[in-house]
Image (cartoon, rainbow, N blue to C red; front, side, top):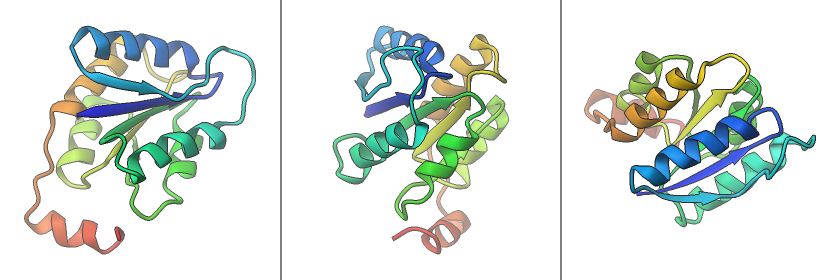
Length: 142
């Protein structure tokens, strides 16, 4: 599984910590920015990550901004994207099991690092349940 990472300036530091954790665990990572804490526009980086998933270059994505809300809104404008703004391990699990989320959105200003890392690793290891959920997901996916 190849994972695309993106963040705005508010999520840059957490993105870097997540990237290191993923690389240490042997995961393939594509970092599409941003590259510092200098102010940038989150929709630009959400678009880069979405493009990597839609084209098939990456399987899943993790987007980080201050709250996760902006990245989630920007990513979900695309029909084949199911971006979930999660705030704990339970919501991360359910976003995969029930919604087949292909992007995890996190808020660097509202989550502690340990919780965020636990969410990331659990989210990546959680499979979609399918079944009754497949019919629902199909209604909003291409």
